[in-house]
Amino acid sequence: MTWRNTSLARRLGTRLPIVQAPMAGGWTTPQLVAQVCEAGGLGSIAGAMLSPDALRAEIAAVRSLTSLPFAVNLFAPLPAPSDRGLTGWALLSGRPVPTVRRPGIRFEDQLAVVIAERVPVLSFTFGIPPLADADCFTIGTATTVAEAVALADAGVDAVVAQGSEAGGHRGTFLAPVEQSLLGTMALVPQVVDAVPIPVIASGGIMDGRGIAAARLLGAQAVQLGTAFLRTDEAGTGAAYRQALSSPTTVTRVLTGRAARAVRTPLVARLEASGVEPPDYPLPRLFLTEPPFLAGQGGPLARSLSAGDLMALLELETTAALQ
Image (cartoon, rainbow, N blue to C red):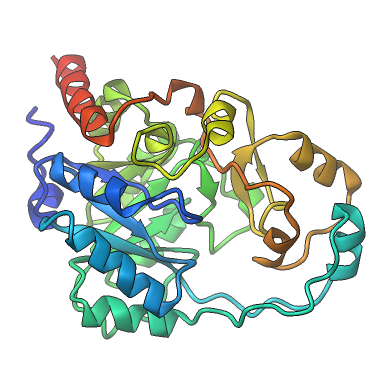
């Protein structure tokens, strides 16, 4: 099989069917996005936590580094957080309740930037946002077959099948997270059989062996996030890079929403307390250290440039399939 040449890669305008996962919080830099694009993949701006002005600046920064297609990722609109549990969480964390909280960033305002800037690809997670005005290729995130079907029925162009191994927030939106933790190997072929749109496999894919397996399962592309966290261009510090070799857990204590992260002593202490975290994203305001969001493949992450990693992934995938 010619693993590079898929209808999805042709539609995206990329030489390789490899997508760099958007990792919000400063870890996905414009340099990382651009290097992935230049190496043949689809780089993704993590726009979910950016104000419209910051998102516009990020898009401009990427375009100053590459003329190739890229994606912007946003979170589907979520309910405004309540003040429930803030006092208890402050006592637990040892930090005071914030007296001033920034107003929430509206999805509609972010989407307006994506449209005005004519971004070629929009990806999203946490549900199905209003996309009537989005004149671009759209990619939704599903953690179950039912979610993938819902996305396809809504007219989304492609779907990321997010296995439970994946780092970062769970994209679950139809059922409780505890009922939506399907592994990538089980989830991908079921989604491929269930929807008529291209499927992008995500979760635990760190090298050419994983890409080859995903392609053989029917995925037209793969999405890698944790694999890029040790690259030269990633905005991760030494502690984060070292932590990738540690065990992970799916937890709500870091942000208020289920996410796979390294099980640091802070995570263990907060979980052991039994105190219910405040609504997303308020727990993040109490953190005394950055959240080390990462997938189960973290120990396989390699330290090199993003361009070199992409070249290595291409060689490894070809060798694995041969």
